[in-house]
Length: 154
Ligand code: DQA
Figure 1: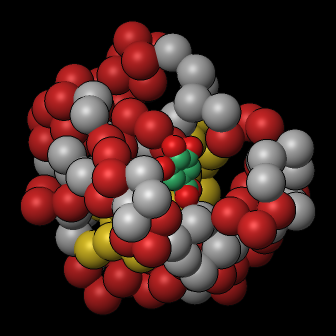
Figure 2 (figure 1 turned 180 degrees about the horizontal axis):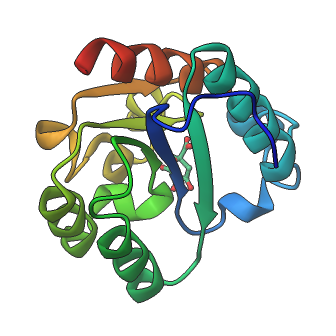
């Protein structure tokens, strides 16, 4: 694919965890109506506008996620991560992101802090303290904020 971007354009990984391939079928009041493919297309457009290249990955499998993150070493300059439910308890995801060692932004489509009033587990994030930034409750626009945060973190 030709992007018109220079070969040395910053490379950003967009990483999604379990059930996020079901966007478009999950409750719209939390997650909106875009499918994951539509979301990825939208975020890629915003990345290109900012002179960044975007690579996308989603899996429902913890080991596949960890191995994918390991494989990004030396390839990406930053990451945008929505780990889905793993956010709230999955320490191996945190370790993999820490090992990768590039700035990353944690994104949630829904307002996890508001939802935590009824579902306390959503108020816990095992990656927030090592993230360059965190965005929640802004739907797909949160990913645009994440790109801007990464641009600022470089
Ligand atoms: C989510 C919030 C998580 O609590 C949930 O398990 C998800 C999606 C979000 O994008 O709002 O799967 O990360």
